[in-house]
Image (cartoon, rainbow, N blue to C red; front, side, top):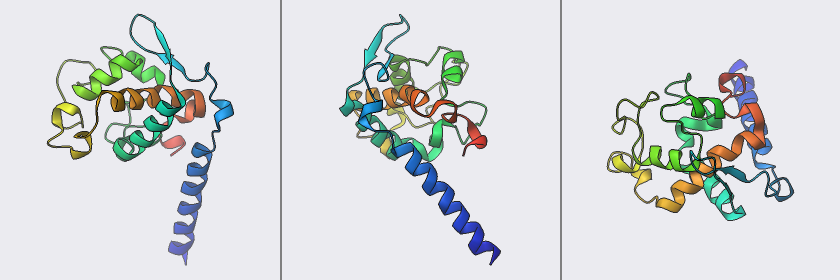
Length: 163
């Protein structure tokens, strides 16, 4: 009985979370909302609605196994929230930096390659989901990561408080 109630509760929580994340409509995604940092020079770019949809789909199918809700399951101290991305070395709080990371992942302090343990284009042989991703796909995924804090606020990267 307890196990059944527990499982039902888990399914309800996951269902509510899924619905709340997927209920963002196009009216919310105006140009200002879709504007994210492009590079370290503080240049900005407005993501197209197609890039937003594609980034979400690709992130969910490729990255969310470890980064659901912007957390990092293998290291809860390092999430995908804006503060954590900005404090990385080099900073990863823009599209170009995130694309570079997905091609050549490095440790948070930037001192060593983690390509053998973190999925990336460099390690596509080990992580098959990365094999078919092209530059536009990586760009869309990076855009998704940077857009999420604007849509779900502190829940993105908020860790076990929310997930």
